[in-house]
Structures are given as C-alpha cells and as structure tokens.
Image 1 (cartoon, rainbow over the protein chains, first blue to last red):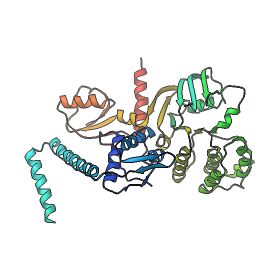
Image 2: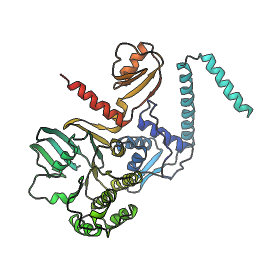
Image 3: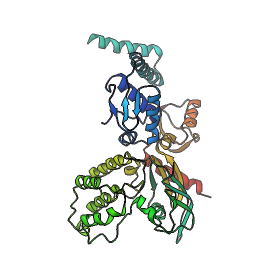
Image 4: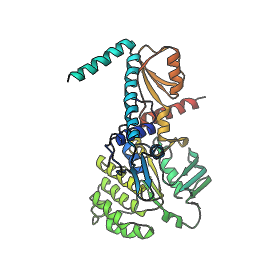
Length: 129
Length: 290
C-alpha cells in the first residue's frame, strides 16, 4: 500500500520528522486504523525516494511513542492508541498550522491587528456557509 | 555484522588515469550508488571489486574473503551485471539460464520466471537477435535471481524505457526485503538510481569526493529568493547567486546573515540531488585551483 505522504522541499523540518508527523496525523485521523499493515522500511524508502536511514528513524520514533509496533518476521502495524493521544496530535496539528499562517503574515509585514482581522473574516465566511 | 564488501586504500592507474585511493564499506541492508561524470572510474571500481582488474595497492574483501585469492568460489556469492556481456549472442535466453543458474547455489527459478513474465522476455530467441532494451532486461533476469548477498549493477537502466525502470526499482526493492543483502549500483544517469540509494559514493575523474547519506546531503544545501537586492558582500555559506537568488551550503550561517542584515527570504527550497551533485563537483574544482 502506498501511504499518502507528501514531503516538502520548502520546509526546514527534517525529512524523518515530516514522515513521522504525517504518519501520526494519518493514525490520529483514523485514515490508518489499528492493525493496518504498514510498508516495510525499504518499500517506504523507495516510494518517498529517501534513504532507509531516514525511514528507519521515523519508524523508530513512532514505535517509541506507541503509534506503531513491529512484530518480528511479520512486519510493522498501526498500534491501538488512546483517545487522549489522538486528541493531542490533532491539537498540535491545528496549532502548528495556525502558527505557520501567522508567521507568514508577519513576514509580509502585516500587523497583529491585521492578522486578527483576517482570521475573523475567514471564520465569519465559514460560519455563514 | 560481516560487511558485504570492504575496500581500503585501493588504487589503480591506467595510462594517465588514476583511480583512488578508494575506501568503501558496503553493509548488509544498504543500497549504494556510485555517482560521477563519464570516465570518473565507476566501472573500473566495480571491476576491481570483481577481480576483473588488479589493483596497484590496497585491499579488497568480499564477504570476508580477499578478492584476489586464487580460489574464486566467493564469486558465487556475488551477482554482477557488467555493462556488456560478451559471448551471449549465439544463445537463447533459455540456454543462458541453463548455463548461469547452476553456478549460483541460491538461484531462484520462480523469481526468474516472474521477471521473464513481467518484462515479456522471449526466451527462445537468440540473444544476438534481441533489441538492446530486451537484451538488458534479459541480463537483469539472469542476474537478480542469483540471490547472492551482494549484487553489483553497472548501469542497470541502460536502454530501459520509463515503465521498465520503474519495474526494475520495484524488483530491487522486493529483492532487498528478502534478506540481509546489499546492492552497489554504478549509474551516470543520476536521477534514476539515486532515488533508490541510501548512500551516494561520489567520484570525479578518479577522485573520491565523499560518501553521503542522501538526506544528509539534501539538508546541507538550500536555495533562497530574497525580497530585496542581494548585498554586495558574499554571504557566509554562499556558493552561487543569480538575480535575487542565493544557494548556500551552510544554511544556518546564511540565515543568520540574512537576519543581521534585515534581509527577507520570501521563498526557500531544498535542491534536487542532481543540482547538488553538479555543485559539489564544481566546488571541488574551485578548491583544487592553485
């Protein structure tokens, strides 16, 4: 199975970290449910055109944090994770996305007030839908 | 764990071309691509590993056995695809399989049949009558099923069209997942085989320019587009500039320089591996000037 992971060349976030975070999001968002079999480190490395050193690091971190588990000779699977952990991943993702948006605006010399105005505008148009 | 191949201080002179000294260790579970310009010594290096050429100095060990030992039985543990195979023309694919398979104790007939199937290979036709692309596919079909711990491929994608290259990469990926194995690939078509590689061993005109883990190399270079004119002075880490664009091989230093000088990068990106290799070879040229 090919995982829907998109690596960014623009981001300064290390590649292993991008893989790790996107897999976490897929697991927390239940696109990948507990027990789903994941590609081998070699197969994922080929799909993403990265080295096994990078993929292995991402898998090891995810395993240490309990998102996936490896069964000797059987492969790697999505683990059962607590509702609180899922919530935390979603919370982190939303905060990060908003922080990035605010940073972009400040880089273009928008004032904090203007950023707030944009935010309210966006929220209001969505509430109106 | 025993290295699949270990080269230390290997040198070879051919007329006025000098290869090495080469230090290279191939660990099981890894794919290494030898990258370099034409005539950089990639094929010579592979021939030295296969004891088809004799090094002037240094040591080569294959799976713990010196490559220049009189007993050549270690060769049944290596699957080597040279750039061309001499003497195949009068034989059909079926004949060639019957000659080659018994030389390799772990030969996998099912895998051979699979590859033949996937590449649509006509086994009853004489090798000499096949197109270069089909010849290349047949040679791959006669190499991969040897299932030896070390596979050495010299320009494996020659004459292959895009779908066949894709199929080859899938085959090699599956092959790697079957055990503690390693692949060494020489390729001048950088983009192809670098995608598959864990490590890049870069050669230029016989000189070893470095061994890099792929993402380590990618993170070392960065391209920036600045909102304003570039400063007259060279930014730390800067290795190339054009219009409002700077390429750096020390992104942290370059970014703190931008910060100190109130410069804003409106866009930044990592480089493609091919771009990096080109720059790397240029940089070395510059630093070798007197």
